[in-house]
Image (cartoon, rainbow, N blue to C red; front, side):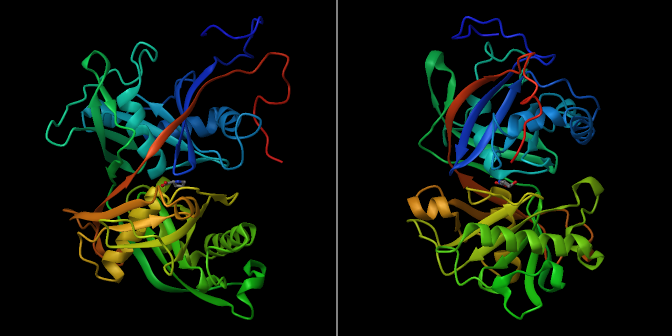
Length: 402
Ligand SMILES: O=C(O)[C@H]1NCC[C@@H]1O
């Protein structure tokens, strides 16, 4: 363990110290775990995810929840050997985690990982990404990393400069981008009936609302703020929005008739509704060089975690809705703002369709064609940590959330 600033032999309780690099992407944290997490059993990334859930969830809780984290923390565990790194289809794997479990795609974390996977010092992280062989595109001054996420391979493009000793370093002043897996709408203008137990006060007397469902590496229910009974996203009580999103999620998960809108065509394990994205198309600062903007709020997971970023996988899903429902031209660049980027005028995610997917799969389970969406955003380093649990500490080993 690195030299500690205290005169104390920290005797970790069983587990090795865990080393992380902390980042934020438009305010949304990503705690990148690069050393100390127990080796995961299984050949495939999804098998390793199942092992992490079954046998090491206490460590997820330790790193995501208090006192080391908080209810809005997000994490990314690097996995340097998966079935796709073995086949050469990916460079390195990742498992995403948050305050109540693991998720299958995360765009804001992917943007942060793009920088870290270019920047990390191989000597400080022995064994991490052993096959790292970054190719420099001198014309665009970028390099790419093929990231194996649970949803599939995501191609990450990182602007770089040639830094110390001629090694590539990410350029903190430019946006990292990624091209996500096939994105497609699964339901447009779907009527949802809300049972009394799943209604919220802002609905008034209404018992039905109309929503869209879309996949952008994770499944989302996308709905306008007004449809939920809120006049906008700007001056609204975040807890009221959290309650409404939680009630809507409960109603969608409880009623089998809606299951069709978030079933994965090939991997049952990926068939879950990650969150609700509340849209306010009346707002959104339009930066130079883009065609449109909208404000949104991604509320995800069973604990209604609130994404501070515009949500990368959600931006891919929403841009796909623009393509499918509103027939936007593929090259139309839309900026997706969160409350943080709207307030600061910086950090919106730009998304546009780069291609129609070659394999349109089984058209019966989608509400429009499958497309590939590029999402761009900026991430920054915020800290570097060594996390331990002292052997006498009987409180914090598995985290807690009040
Ligand atoms: O940016 C994203 O895609 C993620 N942010 C939190 C919830 C989503 O997974």
